[in-house]
Amino acid sequence: MYKLVGRIAAYLLLVTVAHAQEYTEANLKEADVLAGEQTWQQNCAFCHTTGKGQAGMAGPNLYQLFKRKVGTHEGFDYSEALQADQRQWSPVLFAQYVQSPGSTIPGNVMPAVNVSAQQVFDLTAYVMRATGSVDWDAPAAATSATGGLDAELATSEPEFWAQYMENTVKFTLPRDNGETYSFVAYFNPDGTITGNNRGLTGIWRMRDKRNFCYSIERVGVHPYEWMRCLQPKASKNLVFGEIIERFAPVKGYEDLQIEMSWLEGRPYPLEGDAHPDYWTFLFGNTSRYEIKVDGKVEIVDAHFNKDKTITSPQGVRGEWYTKGANGKEDTMCYYIDGVPGVDGKLTECFALVLMFNPRVGARWPSRFDQGNSYWAEIMEGREN
Ligand code: HEC
Image (cartoon, rainbow, N blue to C red; front, side):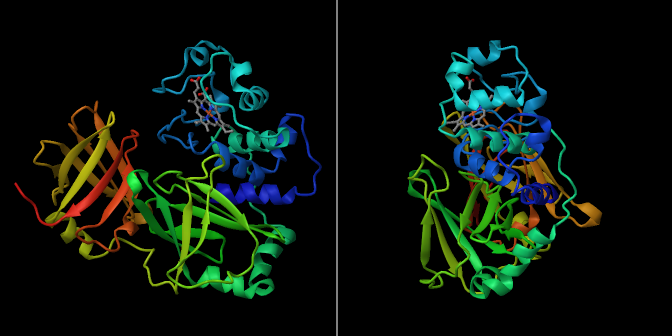
């Protein structure tokens, strides 16, 4: 969060700086990282992750990219061309590769992406920061200009402000096989976005007078993160509970449309520990996992037990534990071992706040740290 605020603040400090194209450290530090993030989310986030330990998707995870050689993220199945290339990633090589992967590293299999030179410059600066390759984020000292635009919104666009800050947004994403996945989110006056979906984080900022921009990250299902800018005007046709907007957050994937509807007020608890019923509920019922392994689905009926073990009629075994800062337990982690076709353990952590409404029949998609996606469903009781 702090990092994001830093990025945005850095961007806002520099809106007046002329376009800098030379890939010097000084210029990159001053690039428009918000624009870079938008380019990233529309063109790259579909296939790549940037955070430490995050699973790769179609493309490799890019954590600390600029500190390593081409084609060396462990566990990713690179083309021979990338494996053979002995160069270290630099901002210039990165920019060339992104604009023309095939001619920069002949034999590469990443498809070309159509982005302008200015976009690539800003993108490079964004990726350097987001992948933890550099530590440039200056303290997020809000200038009067930045503090001003965000703070002014409440008075300059009161209807828009009320719509976003007092109600609940519901996002619905398409899934393969025609299913959908929804989560709810709150836009908060302090510039954060919180939600009831695992690990979700988000921020909103006024980019300039006409652009209210927000980014949502770690959504847990495709496309995992996106960014959107819109005019800060209250929706004219707002009817609570009805879809008022559809948008495609990823360029080139216009079929992937996210639906947005509004729920009146904020009745959905998003903060605090798990619901008090969560534990008795968890220990009395079965969490059925449908885990994707090499294109097939493995069923595991997991029993989370009071003694912190996980057992299942299929013979899968595991352990769970909770953790949290300052004695406040807010995260639950577990592993399971012995899933057919999987080498070693599958692990995952999630925010306990998500367990605010335990119920039989709840069904959600997610993904283990190792990359295997799954659907989980709560079944009543425990057989065997
Ligand atoms: C359709 C999926 C896809 C998209 C979209 C995509 N990539 Fe890739 N990317 C890949 C694949 C696959 C590879 C591995 C290529 C190979 O092995 O030849 C790769 C490799 C890379 C590498 C080299 C990583 C390493 O470890 O050496 C970088 C850097 C990269 N991509 C950046 C980007 C950026 C930036 C964007 C957006 C402008 C982007 N990619 C968009 C699939 C994608």
